Length: 313
Image 1 (cartoon, one colour):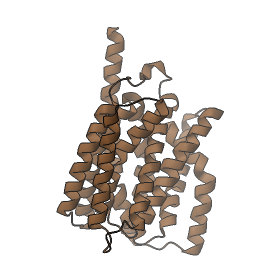
Image 2 (spheres, rainbow, N blue to C red):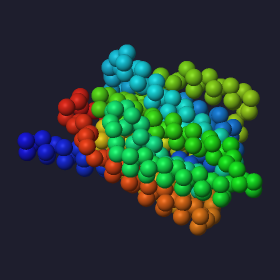
Image 3 (tube, rainbow, N blue to C red):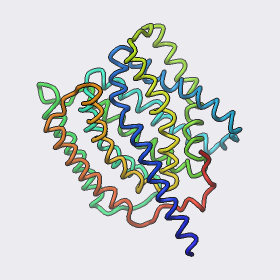
């Protein structure tokens, strides 16, 4: 019993450390996207990053001689790919053509609650009504921010809808990928999802390049390079590994730091002004998200990693 407790404690510590590393990498994704789409077609940015990461994934899988996933795992990988390989990059790239990274950070603050919500649905749990009230409070705070700081008419604009769609799809991809990483490991989960997506991502990238031949200064290519190597590839090695070891709900709380980090990167790298209303909205959202995570982390306890196949990578 003591040995099991020690293993669980080590998994929790390792999961938190890996999760923090993943969040640090992801926190610069919106500023990097903003840099890239200022000069490159958003479709090229969204799917080109996945092509580059997919080629890295093929090399990694060949080096480690990874066994092929089962049929059931391929179906789950398709969900991961739809959420984090295609959906989130596409919608954030479209949104950040017209929106600032600071604005996007406030909306992305909903991601931990959405991730926990999908984890609840996937695990067929029955959380207390307070969970949904807290999640609704976070959504209300985001919508209020969008109305107050959005278009002149006060209406929510297309960029805001793109960001909300990105959050929904990313939360689904995080929850499914975190659970699947218990079987495949964090590195193999994202790598197989990238490989599965390659026929689509390569086709869309080629189509975009033919329509708008890519030309950008060094800053634009640097943004795309970061998105490819860190946001789409190495960041997920740490993130999915952390979710697998520490649990989706528990490690998901670390995402609470992401909006604050993103705002800091946006001010430092892009010179964006962080208005008081954005800070106030972020604080309100994070308070609601923290409550949902606490409620989600109550019974039943997340599955223990040692009962599943040990992750690779």
